[in-house]
Length: 323
Length: 247
Image (cartoon, rainbow over all chains, first blue to last red; front, side, top):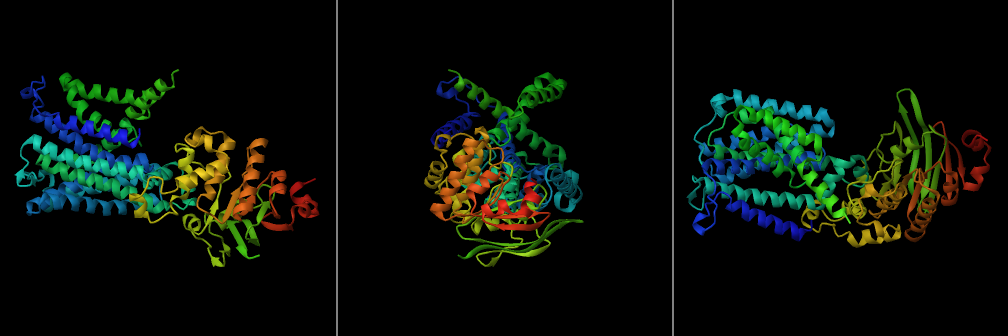
């Protein structure tokens, strides 16, 4: 897709997403919009997609491994919640969350310079467990298992975002900016260097690409996306405890990237939709829904190892190859 | 002539195995030096010691009089030293043109500048020239993975020159390439040596290729240099016939 077509596609998608929770019946259109819970789920999907974009940068583009993204989301969420309780404005804690997780991401990237593949996965797994233990045990700061409640929603231009749709639009605006930033990075020479790192680090190094620096950059940027997603997650749910930041959700982030299409730009959005929206749609099957969800994911992985975006690309390529 | 590359008394041991034993030689600017020897003679280990992929047990390597021993490959590349590998090392999912741009991009501007600058890092025209020079223009937008083995070898060699390298070390460039493509590769390497005064060190088993391309040869056996000189002289050297050619 050319840059112009990508931009048009993005603007149309943005407009549709902005209108999705809005009741359009007043305009004569037969669309009632979404209820509060539907808007909440849609916002959660955006927040999850931001964190998954970070995982996609580390895993899909740079070819590294991470099982620590939920920990970074947790760091951002706790940082924002605690800072908010001390009167720090949301904008400041959002940026600070990004910076803090960027720096921690660099530190976590150092093992990647020495170990690869499942060894690296285990290093990040250990970090994930460590963070979860801190969230759970350091109750004086984090509230322990009781968590932190009554987290304030941000105030933008004097408007407190109590309304679910207003907060959704706010998250959509931030997600759009972060999507554009990542799009810019992966299309720039940096993105090409990340790809080189994934495909052949030995050759990349011989071409003057500083493999160590780009590995650390991938970890730092990917982790910062996790931290900033966490910063949005805290005011979205208004209550945080350690459970969403444990190892299981980190595995889920990995699953989102793989199911969506690792190393494809839209993959994290599709993967996050599968992880956040699909279980909600399957709730009608009550206790069966988790079983159906698991079987669907297994089928998807078996039939399309390149993820859903990979499957669509494959079908489009086959169609255009037809005489 | 000035010595562009000076290799002094390089030794490399892996545990009890002495792979390279006190190898010294110079490579002059504009020269094409061939390094030949039977399997296990230490050619690739010597290459890896020169190129920073292995740290030599003893000895030194200098480029333009500057000690580069143990310098990382990326730092060496920025000093104008490139290499190709024995096994193909292109980036299969990138296009031919993107492979070339990638090969040169780290030499353009600052890292931050590259993030905000043009997607092709200002290397589009240079990549097109290189595609034309290596007769790959028709394949510019094909993914490198879809090219034939010989075409990938050409691309691999072309990538080594995208950084404006003065010294290129080629590890078995002829390996697995069909005769027609091989003649093309030899012709292009000779042309780039003539036109840009690029200096080469070539490890190769294909004697015909080496004899036609190189201006000087050194022969390794059991980690030592056993002969050195013009290709025609080396071919007649009894020590070489004994150790390498075998008959």
